[in-house]
Structures are given as structure tokens and as C-alpha cells.
Amino acid sequence: MADQSKNTPQIFELNNGTMQVKISNYGTTITSLSVPDKNGKLADVVLGFDSVDPYVKGLAPYFGCIVGRVANRIKEGKFSLNGVNYTLPINKPPNSLHGGNKGFDKKIWEVAGHKKDGEKPFITFKYHSADGEEGYPGAVSVTATYTLTSATTMRLDMEAVPENKDTPISLAQHTYWNLAGHDSGNILDHKIQIWGSHITPVDEYTVPTGEILPVKGTPFDFTEEKRIGESIGEVGIGYDHNYVLDCPDQEKEGLKHAAKLSDGASSRVLNLWTNVPGMQFYTGNYVNGVVGKGNAVYGKHAGVCLETQGFPNAINQSNFPSVVVKAEMASLPFGVSNLCRNQEVLSAAVRIRPVGRQTTGFRAAKKVLYRFEGHGLSSSVEVREKQRMRCRVSSNSTETEDESATKTKTTPFGYTRKDVILIGVGVTALGIGLESGLEYVGVDPLQAGNAVQLILVLGLTLGWISTYIFRVGNKEMTYAQQLRDYESQVMQKRLESLSEAELEALMAQVDEEKTKVE
Image 1: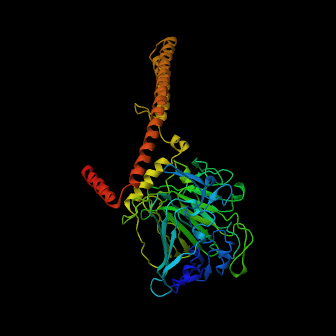
Image 2 (image 1 turned 135 degrees about the vertical axis):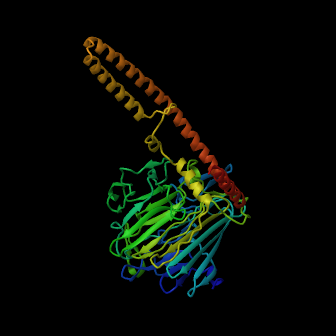
Image 3 (image 1 turned 90 degrees about the vertical axis):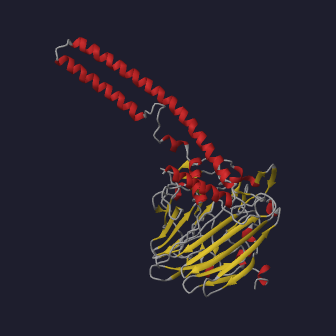
């Protein structure tokens, strides 16, 4: 079957008796994924087609596939790397989208192994991307494996290794979710919460401008759970934006919570955990009258995509996390940069969760573990300390000016703005009390008033001096913050260049120093 599938698009099945998944070797596309609701009734919760023909004919707007070599948009299809200018196909004018005219989603992948059922059914796909394919530099070997690791768990492992040149790589799984069922209508009544307090705003062609802005008080604010359709009318045709994911102090198994999607009628819930910097929240704005499985007609907002990713157009934005993968280290045995975990779907007492991804270093690797919870299953932990370190470093570099301005600022002498106000209030109160005391002991009121005036003048002088010191200190702190941001960026680049052995040695040294301090 592996030989036959090299040139023939087919659909393969994985079935462990609980979860049913259908996957094509055309774009390694998930065409069907059935999970139970609160009553145990199965429903297919992804948009797609019954056969491979519509995919091959280009009727699918990236339904369920792996997109690459670089997911999302590259502005004007141009970038420069190592002093060489590259030009890509413009398949979403005026930009290049999801790898070009014939990205990884439109390739027939070789089936390197397949076990349909039994214990841990799996399927492994391989693809070789040639040097210059769709305008990208260097040859790349790509592998993707879907595995049903238990009765309620599906895992996707993806890896891309450059062979001879540095190249940008950012793979993404582009499934359209509708937790009520693929044929149930739109997802506007789904509720979502996104653990991202900033977005990368876009221009008229949906390319990030390079800014990072807070979502508070805007229609993009999903920091508290709300209906997807609640404010969608205020953002044009719908959401298609990259969220800068927060790096909270508390993480689950080393992962930050990125999003929670839920459907009230079926009680299915999809939780997404990751340690990558961004997530594209896309509400199927360009889906229009697509005839899918069982002749279901998919209209606008029929599904929602939650694509964990590097930032769009990162190759052209120096302040965004890098998606460039180095070729000179491709022979090393391990890849350890920017490991992520992404999508998690839960039905009632049932949850699917993904496991991980790499966007920089010497290879790009992504592990996605879809796990149903509620059956006493233990969690799989594959996150390394380096990724958690990078998450914290990245949080410094993505802090906005507005956010930093809300923090408590101090002067070189340790005074805060609150301190200055309290000093002024205290001096005034002291003056009033002193005047009353002088009058009480018989001092002439005029002399008492003169004394109070002197005290108030001293107080005003002190307030002016403190304000001046505060302003000077604030300027110094702004410079210091810029310096810390620069140091964080340098540290991140150094971490990305470390090998596995060097990283382990560094962490051992850190642990040793911590022990000494304690």
C-alpha cells in the first residue's frame, strides 16, 4: 500500500473502537474525526469531504491539512535570508499564503507505515520538499505521524529537517472545528476564551503591521469566555488575527493555556495548550457555499480554526520570534527549539489534547496529542526546560509600552508616584495641625499663619524636587527596560543556537547556582 500511495491520493482510517479518524495522504488531511457528546453519541466535528477528489480539485479552503513550508502570510511574497533575496508565488494577492500555489497541503505524501486498528493504530507520512520548491531555499525532509495512542487519544508528530540551506519553516495543522457537528450550521454560538492579552494588528491584506497591541476594551478581547458572535460584526468580515499568547506564572505541565472552545448543546469542549508565541484565530470568513460531507453546505463561519504558530510574516519582522531553521546543525540527533503543544478537543467528559512543536533551531518539530479525558488517563509530558525559559524570555520582548506604563515606577531614591502624593498630603496636614497648635498655646494668629506658609512652601518645594527626580528616574527606567529587552532578545538567540548537550550543561549549571544561593 505504501508504494501504491506514492502517486495516488487515498483516504486511510484509524479506528480503536472508540474514536474514528480518516486521514488522506493528500496534504496529510484529516477528513473526518468523530467523537462522542455528553450522551455518548458520535459526531464528526471537522469540516471536509467524503472523497479525495474535491481536495485534489482545489475545492477545500485548507480543510484539515498540514500547511507549509511556512503557514500564514508572507508580505508580497518576498523575504531576504543570509543576504539572498527570495520571491514566492502570490497565491493570495498581494501576498503568499500557506506555502504558495502548491504547498504541503497540495502534495501527495508517501505512506511510510500504516496500522489501521488494534493496539495503537497509526499512519506515517513522508514528503521531500526540493530546493527552490515554491521559491523557498534548501531541500527539506518532512515527516508526519498520526497515532491513536489509547482508546481516547490521538497524537500527531510532525518534523521538518533542512538538508543543505537555512530556510524558514512553520508547519501548522489547519482543521476547521465545529463541535456541534460539521453539518450543524455556524459556530457563532460557540463560546471561546483565549489566553492572549495582545494581538498583532493587520493591514488591509491581513498581514501584521509589526505592532503588538492590547485587546482590552476591544472586540478582540476574549480573555473572559464569550460567544464568538458577540462582537464579530465590529471586526469586518470576521476574526482572522494572530494572538500573542501570554506566558503565565502557573503552567500546566510546562504549557500555557491558549484557548478553550465549547459548544453548549453537545457539551463538547476543546482546550488548547501550547508554548509557542502565537495562535491564529480564524472564523471561516471565506467559506462560502462549499458542499461537503453528506452534501452538507458549509457557509461563512461554518468552522473555526485555532492555529498555533509562529507570528505571520515573521521572516520580515525582526521583532517577531524567528521561524528560520538552521541547516548546518541538521545532522545532530535532537531538536530542542520552541517545542509546542496545541489542540485539545473535549466532549462532555471527554477531552482530546495535542502535544508540541518546534519553529526554530536546526529542525522544526511539532507534536500534537489529542486526548479524551475523564477516563482516568494520565497526561503525557514532553516539554523541556529550555522551552519554558524561552517562553519567559519572549514575554519580556512582547511587552507593550502601554503595559509597561501601568507598572509601578520608582525614582533613583526609591520613591514612587504614590510616595510623592503622600508626602505632599502629609506636609499639608502637618501645617494645618501646627497652625492650630500655635494658636492653642497663645501664639499670635498672624505669626502662626506665617509659620504655616513657610511649611507649605517647603512642602511644595519638596514636591517639585520629588516630581523632578521621578521624571528623571522614569527616563532612566525606560532606557533600562529597553536594555533588558535587548538583552532578552540576545539571550533568546543564544539559546536557539545551543545543542542538546550544551543546553543540558547550561541547565545543570543553573541548578548548581540555585543550590548555592539557597
